[in-house]
Each structure stands twice: as C-alpha cells, then as structure tokens.
Length: 175
Image (tube, rainbow, N blue to C red; front, side):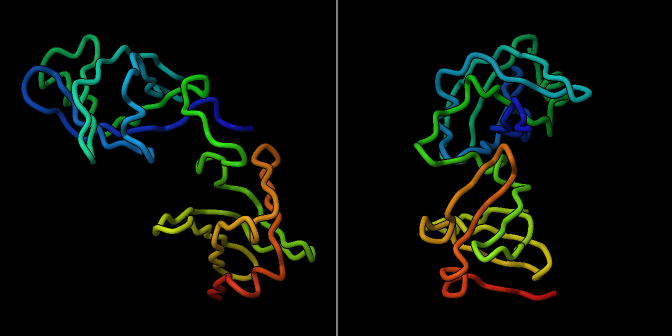
C-alpha cells in the first residue's frame, strides 16, 4: 500500500530569533513549497497538520514560519523533524513517472523470469536515474531507461526489466 503522505523536507535548524526555520527540501524542485499553507509532521506515526508561511526559497533551503512558533527556543524543538504533504497536495507527475519513495521496495524481475532483487535506492547522477537493486545476484545497478524498464507497478511493488538490455547496460556487483 502506498503511503498517503510524502516527505518533502527536513527541518535543519532555527534561523534567527523570531521562530523562523531553515528546511532542507527533499524534492527535485524547492519551488514546490511556493503557495503551501500547511504541512504535516508525524507524531507517533499519526499526521499532525501545521499551518506554515514560507518566507523565502533559496537554491538549497526553504525558510518558513510555523503557527505557534514565535521564538528560537520553540523553533529549536522542531530540529530534525520531517515535513510531509498528503497526496492530494503532492506535485503532479508526468505520465509514466512515479515518486521515488513509491519505487523503493519494488521487486525487479527480467522478462526471462529471473529475479534481480529489490529496489533499495535511486541514484540521480545526471542524465538519467540509476536504480540500485539488492538480491540474489548481489547489487545490480540499472539505468532507468524506457528500453530497460518495461513496466512498473508501484501498488503491487513489481518492476519488469528487459533481459536483453540488462545484459548491455546493467552493472552487476557480486557480494
């Protein structure tokens, strides 16, 4: 089952003395914070809605104020908290795209029936993403190309890959 909430940031530290917080965006586009008026924290695995006001967005940080957080001491208590949005307020993905958090845990198999492992990480080195699979073949690095990744079903946590293309482009690191 897909999580109804997506992580989009982590509170790094208080900024100044009036309760402003510096947040590390955990998203491809920090501008996605623009226009948000509320976010969620998780408390005992339950979402807690908090009203926010974004004060500015830099290249690598977002600065915001939370209702009820009026000074540095109150802001310090939030250090390290993850910030979530519900799926209704998540950014809209292009067709045939998935959130990385939904891909993690998918079991990959090639079209010859060979199980390659479970997707444990997605590297983003530049040109295209690289899926990191761990399983019976050790660690397998697979470029996330349409010719390699034939289908993905995040609800069933399954991924089908082309055996022929894997032989050409995958990197196999045996343990």
